[in-house]
Length: 331
Image (cartoon, rainbow, N blue to C red; front, side, top):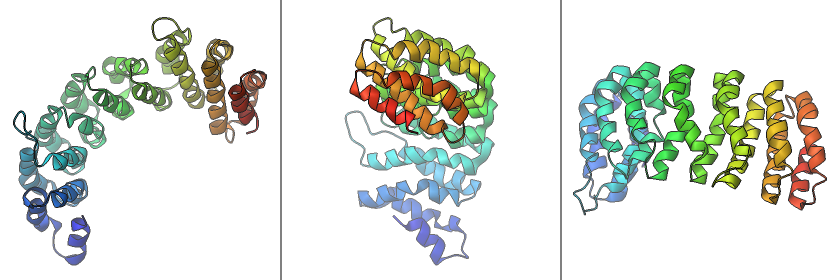
């Protein structure tokens, strides 16, 4: 459990790479599963102290062995170890750099991505891989693997992809993101699993800040307006998601009159009068949350754009609507 810290403290003048053998012994061959599992949790920390050559020649071959699943119908004795390795393996990209990640680490990642039990863990931690590959490298090397799983029947796999969309956006830029991943983001907003919808809505804020108000107007507002209409088999779900999006978009575009007017007039106003109490509650909650986040730095925007709607909502007959509206007015 404390191998990395102890190895560095007890032999400060000795290169940590000399401890690769003892570490791998604990990771793979120790007879106690708890010991192997504890070692696997330290994989990222240990490898971050190594040089690329040591990772390539000593660590990766062993990790390749651990990536192999048990025969069909059998349970791997190292399953817990494999799960922690899958959670940590992407961190090796920071040591290996672009060339090592492309030529060596990606082969290992593909093995883990082929395992239904592990692929969600890898997909959720790809940040160092994207950082190492850069936009073009991610597009050519990693993205084909990701896109092949965008409609995966396992919801945790879809969630992991949606969670990391802002990471891809940051490194790939707007044009590549729109071409390859925008539809994944929009599909997430309407996913049948609430956790995925919530994450996709949360993404809107970071994507809007990254790509700007024109991107919101072109690609996001049409979805929000359609969802707010509440038509189709997921009418209620769509109205709630649209209101959840309002908070994040108001925060991202505070000061943009065009975006805020559309959100308030075409989403908040009609849904604050919705026949379903939970929808009205969500409208008040969204404005309360936006007020809380904007009050200190965008007081003028809050007073001019948000407060008038809260003052109307406070007259609602539903107690929880009044509660959220009053809370927003009190900030």
